[in-house]
Image 1 (tube, helix red, strand yellow):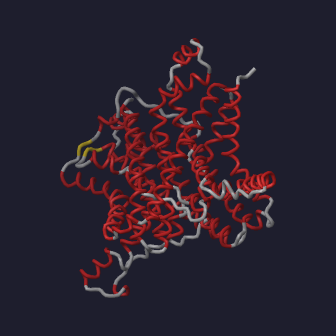
Image 2 (cartoon, rainbow, N blue to C red; image 1 turned 60 degrees about the vertical axis):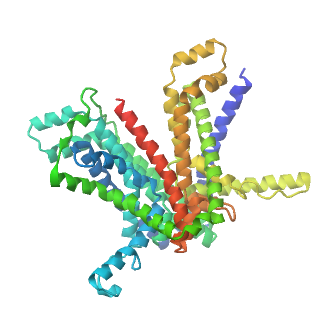
Image 3 (cartoon, one colour; image 1 turned 180 degrees about the horizontal axis):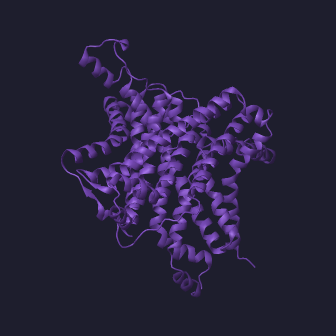
Length: 546
């Protein structure tokens, strides 16, 4: 006979699973039951053009992020040069800049009327755009550059960690066999850190597929922008769902490539010789050159966007007191805080129940609930709104039938749907932290608590939670930070006249009002810096403890 607490936990896990999987199920159902057949719709020239643009964008960003991420990780891990310690940390910080903020800043700085070209014309006496050549910024190439500068830290983070954990012994053996530095890097280091590189690239490609702010601002027609135009302009829900299904297939293929590429390969580290002791010192001009190479991604990916937005914010100080900005800040704080708390609580409940069950079914549930992180925000928005709107209308009709009063749309007419999207999108972050933290709780402590009469729920609350508190706070902060930066799902699901900091930046910048967008952009960046600092500190602590 199950206790009420156990029944509550099982029901809670089922509800979590239903909530996370319902958007995907909804997208598949609507796609297959749409008026036009799936193959007929997807074979149209417009959709094919969107798909080609998306694939080119993903491939270009992956290549550039690979070069920047792996190259900088190799330099800071293998060489000692001026400012290495500062740059090693600074290379994380472009991750704090939402890609759409970087896009607005890059265009504002490098466009014809921007500071850079203005200075060029003043220096060389040019007057017209025809007097000199300057590449167009709002192109697919510009979008690739902006996204690469924003996303390369994923590759850098995981590659750097793998390089710090590798053993020096393998490199020394290769050196004794006559291999030079470049040969050792290509034939020894790269194969050893391949899992980290591939994992980082998978995240980069998924984030590129999911991007909306950059491609919309640069007028690059991708599958993500097609969802918005098909749904909000043509009012074709079935077509939008079918395009979403294509994106889901692309994301699934990307994740599958990582699994196939890794195969059964095993990579082991030596606990005797950490690689940190094997850095080669480079001084003088060569060292400064390497420092400059590592500083370039930080300059264009972090310092430039912050500098541009800060300059506009100082020139337009009155916008800091704009009541719409204050309201957007309040909306962001309460919505993202609520989403972070709910996500961490649900993740802990799920992991606790699944770990207690210790069955293949539980592991399957854990894997299924990770799907939200691999699902672009635009798809989540569409997938949530379709079933939630039907449920909302059913509840309103039932309430009106019983009471005679129309309550309105309680879920889709409020910020509830937006918070739900945040919870689903970033549930994997909280679940991973909860699973890792719960795994570090000694079984002996749990057994002692149970022997003293504590129930399973009581053990979770009074024993495990205090031990896991630090990891839970970190997980909540990461969910909060990512929720603050989330744009596509918020644009689709927000109620009328409801703005967050991210949507305010998008709205003002889309109208070329960069001065009005700057304060909100700086606030989003500040929150992003908090998250990057936590990630960098956590990663360093994990690596240094080995």
